[in-house]
Length: 93
Image (cartoon, rainbow, N blue to C red; front, side):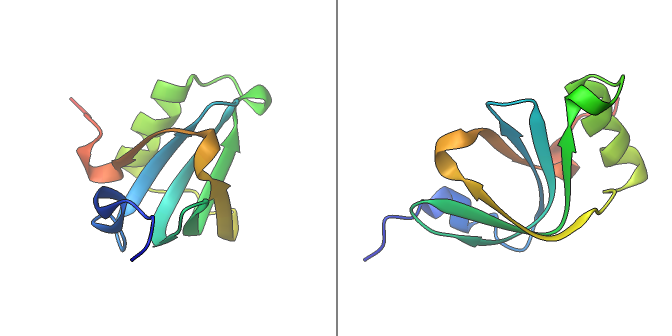
């Protein structure tokens, strides 16, 4: 038996948006989950201190234009995660 969340396991293989408690958001394909980390591949790890777009605008643009990959792999601490959602569930209307 593992401590990983069945809800997160259901998102494996999906392109997701991971909102973090910091000024970062991560978009990419969720490829792994364990009790401490999420593994994201073909990821866009974006720091909002280095741009003018708000979190909502950046995620909306990514949902309409595609993920701007800048990392092949990112491990995100679950303790830093605020929300995880599928990118195709982001409202673009």
